[in-house]
Amino acid sequence: MVAGPWVVSTEITDWIGLAYDSLVYRADGGMWTLVGNDSTAGDTYYYTIAHFPSYTLIEFYLFGQDTSWWQNTGIDPVAGVSRPLSFIGNVDYSRYMLPWYYSAISDQK
Image 1 (spheres, rainbow, N blue to C red):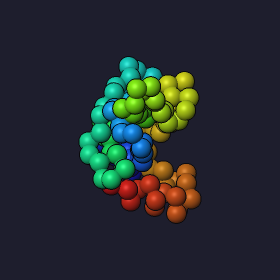
Image 2: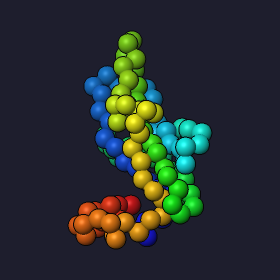
Image 3: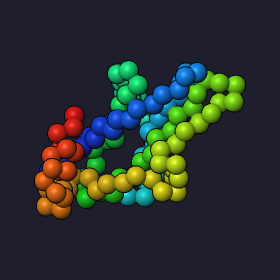
Image 4: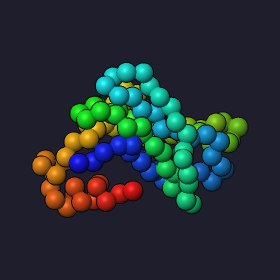
């Protein structure tokens, strides 16, 4: 079983500099919650999504803004709030996925 809290990592690069980064998530279609990164390692940023009861639908997207005068932004996925990434919390995905894929997601820390 893959139990929360869940750590999401992403690589963010900007040659001018990063002013702001966040992960935005919600559970079961509720209010959006914005969290800053927990830590970084080079260009890799880590965020934590809180624990929720089993079978909760968790949706999320990532947002970043640089330090330029234009304040360029990036969203992943590009559609952001209208088509966020999602998963169902605390589900044993080993029943539904190929073994190598389950191994890859369950071994992440």
